[in-house]
Image (cartoon, protein in one colour):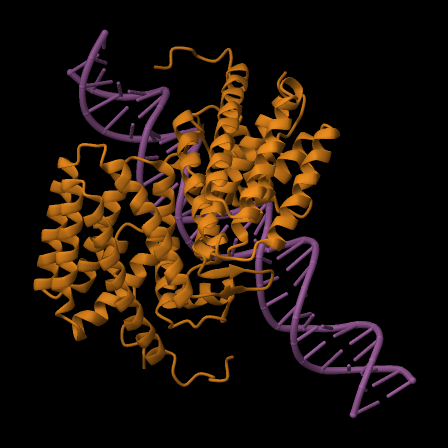
Length: 243
Length: 243
DNA sequence: ATTATAATACTTGTATACAAGTGTACTTGA
DNA sequence: TCAAGTACACTTGTATACAAGTATTATAAT
């Protein structure tokens, strides 16, 4: 009944992807959406059968998801951890940590080109909203922050982002899809907040940047609540006595 | 001639490790030591033959090393990136970033148990020095910092550490081995600096902590120079016109 | 009924086989 | 000698096969 749509992850984002990538992305979405509940035990063989592939791409996927901390590899099976509220707050700690670091670098650099690029992405986001394309909006939203981070050319900050990104992306996707249906007016605020971020980079004003980051956090807090609600909707009818 | 020792990575650390883990650790050491030069192209088949295993564990190793940013996976072969001076500075940026974050959490927690644990590790380090055991010393050194980071129970800060750790470990191993031979007197300073770190945690004094981190950085700067020298020693006789 | 032991149905880790694609080198043509 | 095209060697990604180990279940003995 919840399988009206076969896959949660946008198929168009996987045009050139390998089977391993597909399994990774889809499995991640199913875990973060709560469709696969935390505590569940995943078997390579079973997943391979489910996705209609061999164990090789499944193994690859499990290794990646383990490194993203949403599953835990044990001797017998992979245990689903999922994305608790605590964990989301932790992700956000790290985002604030690295984006603050990036900003400190940016104030010493010429940011004209970056500001231009960000403005373009922001326009794209506006168009996505206009045409109610939640997936495209999510893509541009993630790209916005990635563009900022990439601009300082720091391989280990980028490494952190690369580890965070997939989970963030999945999360934002799910959240935006539900928001487009129910809280359409939120998007004006999100757009304004991103514009504020651009202004902070343009003027190299730390206070504005902090303000923007903080508001972004509030925004995302909203996302979190949306998602937990969505998860509760999904995971109904399963056992309830779970201390 | 440079193959007097078959493996760079301590065999005793791999007692329960899989073939994939062994290849990963050893390959990492060979890359960071400069034994495999940056720019080299690695083939799965060739590596499998070299290590006497199949492609499966080799693939696993390459995926991991790519996520650690010391190789780059391309369509035809994996390109060795290695550990440049810039990259090492970047790793250190991240270490300072997360250890500062951790310290801010620690000042709000009861650190008695942690201080005890760190003192024990410090004693172990002293013994390692006394018996000239560079590998054991490196192990305890890494463990020292890992213990601090684990103490705040933050899964995504830990994730960052998990990504940094292997490269750090390899680096420290190589550096300490050469130091035990040539700069034995340095170890008193390292011990003192770690004691300073413990004091900072005990008294929750930010200034001492920053001082300690800074001195640790200076120490490591020394390590970097040692390592570049060692690398230059190793990679002699190969082509020189490398702009 | 309960405990100990043995069979079996899983698990992961590794090896091997195969398919599709890419770059290189050689051959063939002028 | 040079250019174009073709064959070949080598690449990754995936499927499959096998081995070693673990948990569970069934069986047998007390």
